[in-house]
Picture (spheres, helix red, strand yellow):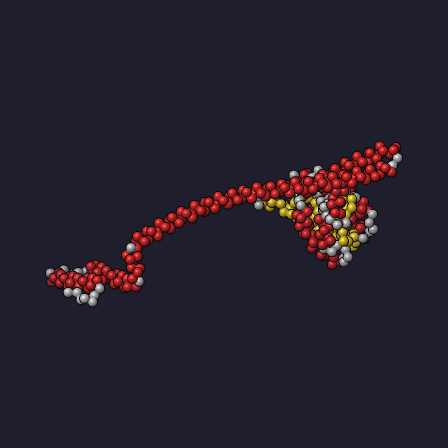
Length: 382
């Protein structure tokens, strides 16, 4: 009889041990009979039944010890582990499917957001462009009104015989004004905003710092000052600057910003200045507008007007970039021809500058591939 103090598992283990011992005795008796009959069992091999019995006993004992460690309230879960595992797997599969559905929804929403953002950016760009165009038209109308007022005022002072001459002068001035207004709108449309151009011009600030070390109290002249971005950079870096531009609308825009600028021919303005009077003479995107005799005269007058140690900076579109030399250069109807860097370098050395340096700016890329620099500048030291 099994003792009353044994648990069910312990009683089962006791029965298994008893059965193993009984079978072990029978096996040994059978083995002895085999020896007496002249049969010898192979040596060095374990008896399969005993090995299996020992493994079964070990596993049963391990399970018994493990079961003792489980809290009583968790034992039902252990007995139903397969059902619980299956439920967990199904729940995870359900969550995985839901996550995949949400991921597809997020991707679709992202695509829609990108589409709407692109449309918004396009509309904003068009709105900015339209605003600039309207602003240029307003400026042109205001300039036209000033022109009419000037001619009306002067016509009162002239004799009737001079009315025909006065009318012809008014017609010429009005035509020039229309061209100036067109070019101001063109600059806003194709060159970029004032903020963008001013940011690009900051690349020249290291040259200004070196110039001020050599020539304190430096003054500058900017030929073709345009909308005045470079004049602002010069003033912000402590260099008093005066701008000259043949476009009256641009000169008026500079003046409205509190910048020193006037309408006039840049080369003629340099001819009027004393020798060795300026530390810096600059011209951004002007040399490509000049005839060759005008270009040579610009360099001769620049060298004369600069102080020893002064510099000249002339930036122009870079024909080394095929996109520039074959397409974008001709967007501006007032451009004459591209100027290779080697030519501008030679003009500087031939004119008599002590040192000439060519620097390339504004990388141009197509679909992330570098295609060349859009602009270059000649830095000329007297």
